[in-house]
Image (tube, rainbow, N blue to C red):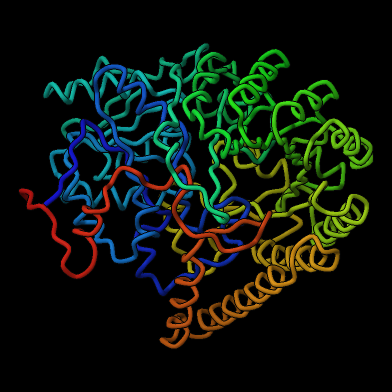
Length: 575
């Protein structure tokens, strides 16, 4: 039998650990906003894991990433307990970066504790830092590493465990249990320069095949925190000061390390796209150095997040460097709502004058994202945004300036301004504690999972208007030939089926307090269909799993075969 051994395994859990067996909740279309190429299981792990893996390797500590969520999607017969039994390490790490993993990560940690009772379970991430005091009190959680850069604390912690030393007093930023008591080692490790000071390696991804439905896409993250202050965001200036206890809220990675990171794709860069995260916080010098590297290494295309309307010289540089796309997020066409959301740096009229300049500079397309769940935004405002989107499509022929709209689901980020000061901004918060969020993740109907509503849209309203708005926008895109008719018909059919199921579920729960067996059967079939592929709103077509940068590459096919199906066998461990 095959086993995998490491000094530390980083395990990414599905949002709902036992999603394959659930027939009591709906993994509904749009319950994850469908804005990126993942499912409601949220199988993308934080990119910071690469930095941890690389940093430990530079100190002769082996760290391996196992994407349990991705494996469960790709191999429906996988026995997760048998798989965990084949992983041997003294330390297992779990991400609680986004709150979407709050249920699944703790359930997976419970399983690890049952199979490997002597192993150390470690949690980290923005949400883990926010909820550290509550998180560490779960029996399955031994250590919480707080902070935005945990490279050194994780290294020191792992090296101690490898030496058989469980005295963690010299390791900064920890909350851990000792003799049933919670102990703190302070919160003093807060690097102000050279954030995540390693060059992440994408070399493992070079040989991943490219298919018409599965192109290569990597992400770059040149900084942490933010200089901006969007009220809904857990990475904003307010949130970072609140969660990380720092004054300086934008910490940049060494630019040379980012260039080296881009180099690691080698010749495969020609077939690879980049999602350039948070590049809107980069100054012109750093940005142009990045663009030179993109050009020199031959990357096929780059999607640039931009907070403001990009100046002409940088647009020209982008256009000369690669097939460049700009992503804008005004959140609403209404300047009052846009400003209240933390944006409002340009009006729609200014954007419409800027778009032709961007296209003339060589930008291949502009994507304009609108958000549902903002202050002052009622149903009419959302539908007015859709009407404005039709104007954009009509004026710029669709793809050159593509509007998109999505709901803010499932949670308003704990630690952000709207979560901490809800009354001031017109919000009502339903879930405050970590456990309340965990239980919300397994609510049958997705509007009940939401941890917020606004004065202008109730939770139920947010669910209903999301389907109404996206159905109308998809229809508009079909009418103008932006999307092929079969794409539009498939999305509209899914929306109709989803709304019908949600309605039947709500009626059953209201009248009888339970879901009938026949409805559960239909929900199970629906879930299997929805979770059989990934998709997004940009090009709403089913895409097969595999080939994405975060899909698992650690567990070999032979081992997957051995721990799948009715004959799956685990390795015996002492109870």
